[in-house]
Length: 260
Image 1 (cartoon, rainbow, N blue to C red):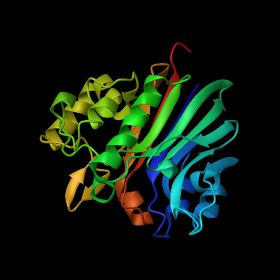
Image 2 (image 1 turned 45 degrees about the vertical axis):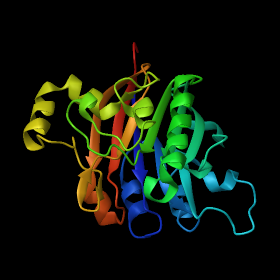
Image 3 (image 1 turned 90 degrees about the vertical axis):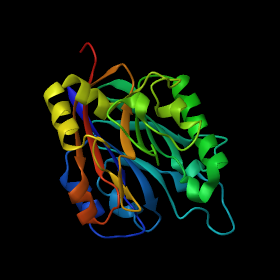
Image 4 (image 1 turned 135 degrees about the vertical axis):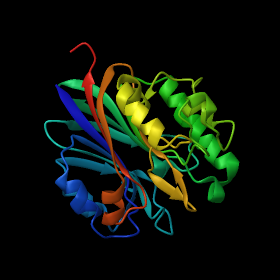
């Protein structure tokens, strides 16, 4: 049996057709970033269960962050527990859900690395470092949907990628401190003909486009899967996501349990 995970920075500040697009797709788990308080009800209505970060933050006089990460599931998947990672510069970008799917336990995380331009290298670096440590010590099988705000330049060979700071390779690089794999790179490795087409179409990278950084094409958005999971297929809905109102592509990965 297989199941589908989507990752999407929905750009909730622009309320257009994001929820409508997500509602038309088949998925079991959705990891969303930049869900606003105003847009949350639209997304929550698409799932049997859903939790969002700003409902788990301590009360603040100014109301707190205007947006946060969320995890949604459709039955028969179910959320058993949900929370935010501790000791984070931006905890609203660090949601962790314990999910049961196909009667097996899975940690489904919706994460975002703060942009260095507003948070600085230290803030972004600490967030990334904490993500890497959680994955290194992960409590079980895990899938991560993340807006990486990185790399600076993506190449076809991972060791050639260029990063914004020294912390990012710990989470994303070839010598990362954890054992999760980038689902799209995994999919390309398993499908040489597809990989050759990507290399021919985009010889200098990135592997595909999920965001424009000042007009520069980037693949910031990704799904990572632990070794217990097998990657069957990965899609990137760039034109559809932009048409719906987001400035990030929607990433969809079909996964299965290894050995099943």
